[in-house]
Image (tube, rainbow, N blue to C red):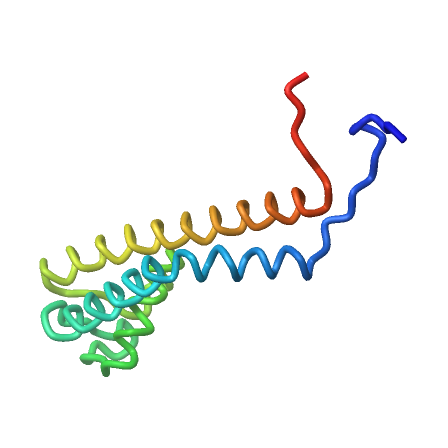
Length: 129
């Protein structure tokens, strides 16, 4: 039966999409690991050279709070409850922001590829005409 693609309903299963997401992620695992390692290197540099302080009590923060601050910065949320006070810290914050943008792009592209592979597995093919 030759049903035109516009009237054919394909089911792209969530399970298949997650399997493909895991496969692509495993394939790109070295990039993810390098990105996470860079994050912790920058978080440690922020703790020692960025002089992060709490805006609530104006006191230096712990390493855990510094990692939280770097995570919030990398995710481009930026609550503003902890800030860097040195030029080196501000440079590290910029690098963390760019690292977060790169990670967001990487996860987005992995998700798109996983859906494309799941669609291909379900029988969807792009036609040139």
